[in-house]
Length: 198
Image (tube, rainbow, N blue to C red; front, top):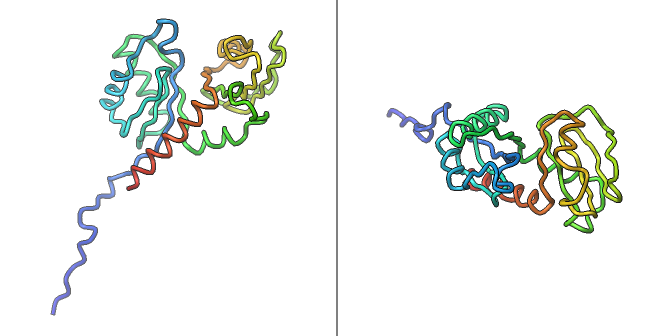
């Protein structure tokens, strides 16, 4: 008697790849009426660019998405897409879940007041460990590769440790997120990844 062939995996294709969840940070959109990008239009663009499970969080350029593209490819595709659709150049920084989690875990200052905690994400690791920023008062910062950790009792609206200052001194692209936003992005990315595995 001829045995039946096992067709359990008949529909499986080696070309089917599971995407990884990424956190994408845009620099300088929807600030003081400049570089306006509606979130609905942004999500539509990212869908058209073949990203999956796209989510945005608040209006400041925070994106969760899944993709089989590399971080470099994601950055290039989004920059090009925004330029073509909205007409302006926007810096894009991409992190994996593991990278963002490590960034949060390595925060070097006390976490007893979340309102003064923030992370400045850089587009590449900086070899410069110390820079001089005048008149920062009690504010503190620490450069660690592709992130600058901030602890700013003066408030982020008043601190001298701004994106523009860090970009000039470190020769990088920089964008800052406070602790609450950063934790929320990690939560959303983990949730997206879990749903994708269901």
